[in-house]
Length: 103
Image 1 (cartoon, rainbow, N blue to C red):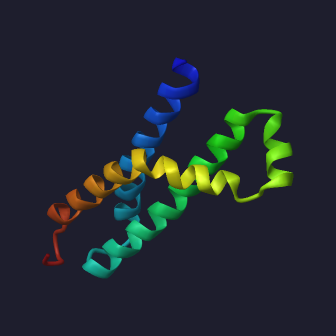
Image 2: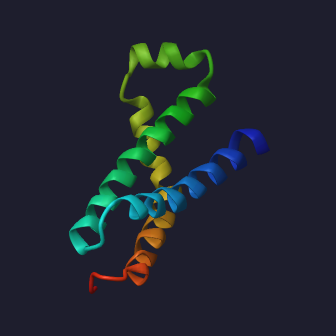
């Protein structure tokens, strides 16, 4: 149970916190850039989540991918209940680190 549920959820939550902060260090400061960081983080987390479900499905993943290719994207959207609030909290902490831009 720990390997199948807790570790993937902990990994997703950690990725949802770290990815926006890493993008903040790369991209400039500003509200438009904050929105872009949120969009890029969302795309990255959907990809990480979908690939995680594919790996957890194991050998059945190929069969599911052949029959219903959007199945893993749907599962990833459902997993957004876990990573989306963490990502929003991470994004909301970024403006207080700005040195030049004004919120």
